[in-house]
Structure formats: C-alpha cells, structure tokens
Length: 226
Image (cartoon, rainbow, N blue to C red; front, side, top):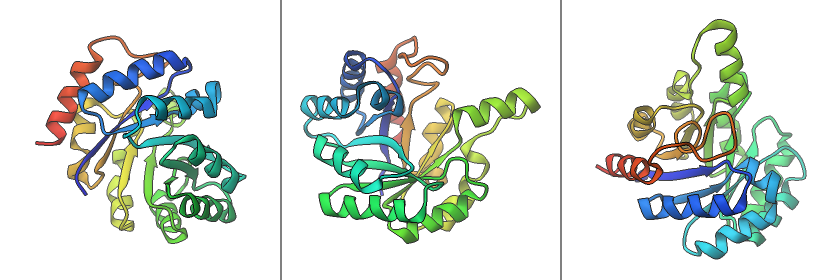
C-alpha cells in the first residue's frame, strides 16, 4: 500500500485537538487519531467533533481496548471513527469481539502489540483473529523506564523486521521515533507513519510541541511521498 501519514492527537483539550488537526490536514496528513488522552478527557465527544470538522478523513480511535470489545468498537463507529485499536494483551474473545463489531459497522480493527514479550508472534496471532492492521508499539513508560535504568534507547525499529515478516497486513510503528526514522518507516515495510510524541506532541505533557508544526508535517509528508 502507498504510505499514509497519521497524526496522533494525544491532547486533553478538544479545542486544541481540533486546531492541531486542522493544521495537520492543511499540511497534507491523511489520517487523524483521537489519541488515548483525548478519549480519556473528552470521550465520544472528541470523535464526534473530529468527524464533524473533517468529514472526509479517516479517524482512528486509540481506545487500547482490553475488554468489552464489541461495545467499545460499536460506540466509536457510531461516533464517526473509521478505525479502533485493540490490545494484543487482551483476551482472544475481546479481539474477536472488536473484529466482529468492525465488520458489523463497516470500520477496521488495529491490533496493538505493546507490552508483548514476542511482538512478532502476537502480531501474527492478531492477524489470524482478523485485525486489519498491526500497531507495532514501544510504550512511553517502557522505553523511558528502561532507558533511565540502562541507558539503552528502545525503539520499534528493534524488532520491526520480525513483525513485518510475520504478517501480511499493513504495519504501523509507534514509539519515540525521530523525524528521520519516521520518514524511513515505509522503507522498512511499515507504510502507516504516525507523527505523535515527541515530534508533534510534547513527550512529557499532553500539549502540542513547540516549533513550526505545519512546516514539520509538510516536510514529513513531502519526503514520505517522494
């Protein structure tokens, strides 16, 4: 598939999220993500507001679903989401329920392998259960805690090849990537490129990062599509 650029709106203020999304769309971003902090702060209202403002853009609801899979996916689909996220650490029945709801309501399921010991095996398992995309995810606390303890920088690049080789569905790599690493993701077999913390969002607060956000996003989208 051709590269897709997604912005992760990991914000807690709905007005700021809408303004940031507007900048991202003007810069050429393809998908909008209602990040987990935004959903915790604003719930369904955030997804509804994004859908109202951006009727033609795919909207990912990063629920990180662990239980109640059918109901959570249904709620977000009816609010206007086109994609929902379920965790590989959830029970098999929860993943199946999310997939069924996505089929019933015409949206797609993204399976997140964060915190799995074998992320490649977890990704293949989720693919077999019917998810449409893999979110290959190195978590914020995981990478920062281990780096603080050992000095080693963790990155989705560490085991990205194994994940890409294990599945036949599109992969998205998430977790502390630099601009150059993000731009290179399609070359590594991960065509769904997410721009979030620390690039667009402050890594240590749920606010937009300082600097020229629009210019940065324009440069990223331009180079990814070369």
